[in-house]
Length: 390
Image (cartoon, rainbow, N blue to C red; front, side):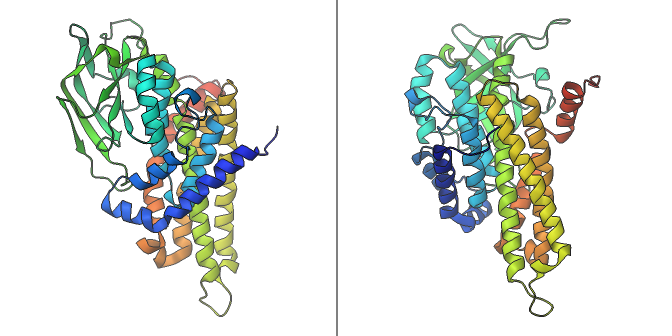
């Protein structure tokens, strides 16, 4: 097993770190306070060719893999952006790019992939519903056939980046769930315009991840054209899983970078801070040990994520690795940001020291895009062969 990065991977990681540091912490503080999409940052990412790293070369991508994407995300996050960088990659090259590159029509690929890769358009995905939550098979949003196309009705909740997206990947039922039938049958995916008659959205007030809006979305007889179907009509469940499975990897990469950034801020502060005499507080083991413990946990999550990404790229099973990495990263970074704030004392509570933003943002990922309880369910059933409890 070779843990060395290739020359190309090192170059991508270095480029991503330079972009992250160029925008810097103050940029992200301003965006957070304004609740503004980081448009300039994302343009720089796309201009550097980093958005399309795992998308097809024939449409402007680099044709590489999830290993490279994970490296890019963690370095952008560690540079200053924090965990929401993973969300930017999730909604654009994953929900937009992967769904189209794998299941879109040739015309859809030719039209949309170059625009996603260049940053000309942004994407979002409407999946979660108020009464379904993590139980996707219970979604009620329905697209009924209407001549050449469909009419969409229903609602979604906690949909990321809707106001700044041009395209929305919508998951809906196209055949009603039959009693005694397969619950996975009858789901379909569509790529539609966000700006469309009958589609409305309302922002959700929240504690963090302010640079990417979270919204309730409502569909009132929204027209869907035949060419907007992504994949197989009524057979979208397994195709949806192909789109969703990589979100664990990008989420973990954003968290790993966040943990690295939080620890660096804490150590830099502690190295400069003197309270009792001339010795910096970083010499106190009461501060050293918790930060060292967090570092060990973050590095473990990083390596598990690399394993998941490498297995994905090799076509090997990676679900358990990706879930374990996400579980470890979310918990470790929650502790790392908390300990970094504690190291800074009162200044950790001040916006000028930046850790409070990292702390607020990373808390989301203890329960999103999948909760740690559902991850533990997965591990218990798939890895430990224990009976399913739900």
